[in-house]
Picture 1 (cartoon, protein in one colour):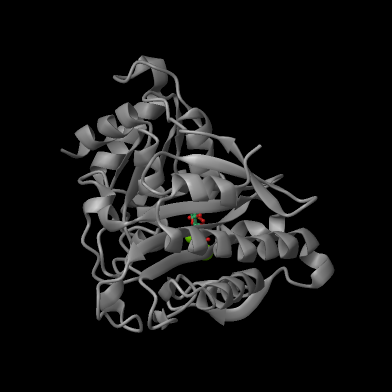
Picture 2 (cartoon, rainbow, N blue to C red):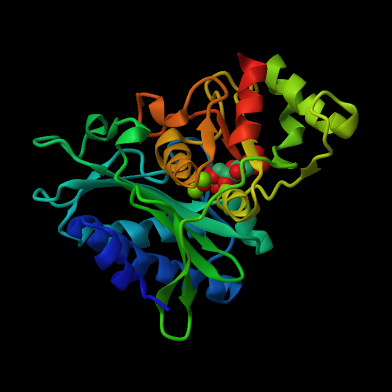
Length: 322
Ligand SMILES: O=P(O)(O)OC[C@H]1O[C@](O)(COP(=O)(O)O)[C@@H](O)[C@@H]1O
Ligand SMILES: [Mg+2]
Ligand SMILES: [Mg+2]
């Protein structure tokens, strides 16, 4: 079995990116440990404070953010970081060439019920002379990502990674703290009969999305002519991992619950990295109107509509919006 570092040394022809991914995994192993301790360490529950997006932070959101931030700040190649849990970007090493954007703990509403959560990350090259303390340095489209991935904290801790040459997954062996290569060149089946969406928002979606999901629900009696199954874990990492394992379509579309928040998921550290993984695995990642990775970001915490997974099914969803 191949160790992560050995794999990266052969597969990733960029030493700086290898160091960043390797370093990031040190923090993710610490997060695994904290999650395993859970209530024994008194770290479940709310941190009694809000992040910049007005969302109530969990203690573990804050702990995970600090672990990743401190680890990355000590890696020479990292020029700056942007996180869901930081209002503004944080400059790290002036001589670094890379920017790391992350969601330290995705699906954190699931922590207290002991359901799968994850860390999502995206790595961008910093423009020469850019100021890593300013948002402007980070506002690059998803197509510019040099690497992306997530760590899923479930029954096992897994890393799923792309450096632009396919998607690979690694399992953490808790006995020696090493990640080992498990699946190579992961491919998402083009067709599916499984969808994931939070149905409780149905009345807030655009009419096009209501029509599409309405037709999914009609199954073999409707225009799509097949019966669908539904899943909703409320943890994007877990949903995307299912899709990378057996196909499916995951949607968190625009809705009009709150006009200041068109869509729930964040472009730069949720939408873009997951889109890179899905596309590298032969799937499709769309806002329902355009490719997510083509969206030009205007802010690091910008939200985006997400429709991603099996290529043919995402294309069908897009047709309803054409
Ligand atoms: O609670 P809802 O509306 O079902 O939303 C669930 C979605 O929100 C998220 O939890 C957002 O991520 P955070 O937990 O990092 O804020 C996704 O993982 C998930 O898909
Ligand atoms: Mg998230
Ligand atoms: Mg989060």
